[in-house]
Length: 322
Image (cartoon, rainbow, N blue to C red; front, side, top):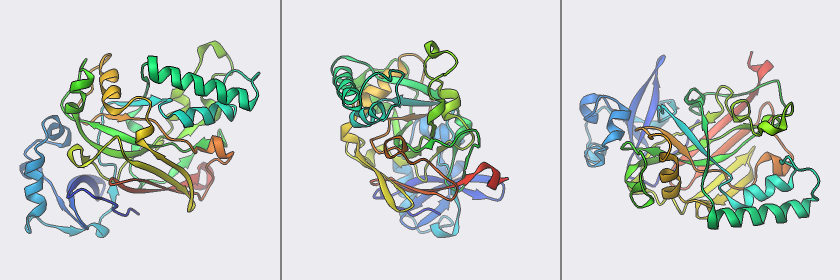
């Protein structure tokens, strides 16, 4: 189930059509299919390479086009990325919380010492550091029409609601000044994390193991909408996650250590970012590690970012799912 929560005059979405997914244009409480002729491009990623939002604005205001009530379709992930990049430790208070809660390889500090250490680290990073990236698997990107199956090998699966950048024109070694020219739009991603797998226990020198901690099936619930960048102030959005109706995360993208331009520029220095790729910007404070409450069978996560809509993710224990 998905409510709109859109403030933009239109957005892109993908919806179920039998076993397939079709691209659609959302305007208000209705949706219409977008074939290649209507889109003016062969597929979604081809459109995002050189997006003609004016074309879609005209379609959004037209009465014809096979409009359907949005409530009558099942939305799925609105993007089909070839690469998923994730920014780590990009909200100051979030990192302080995680370190103070014991998510660190140094167990000698008291909680107050850990908070002070993390606070200084974050302030130094913002002044002198660079964004920290790791990669996720595009196969983990799903819509909220898919239940989140909680793997049975752990009991500490955590939520991380994030603003996600959708890349437009290919970006390779772009400057901060030019970076936003390569942003097509924005969407919502919940970057689910298995906390006890983040650090290797068999050889601590290896450090973090993001593959096992973040890449189980369905660990990147995405969408429901792809909102054009021109309709979004990415640096001033409220990020809110509710667990079973209780607010757990309530942050603002103005608190990003590295802003969106810095993230896009930084990520593009190593590998070209391709049209349709996702770049996650980090998660604000209020994860399960802070609350000492992790995801359980039957939990419902409701994630909202102002203007981008709302996703509702239902959790199912692995055994129950089978």
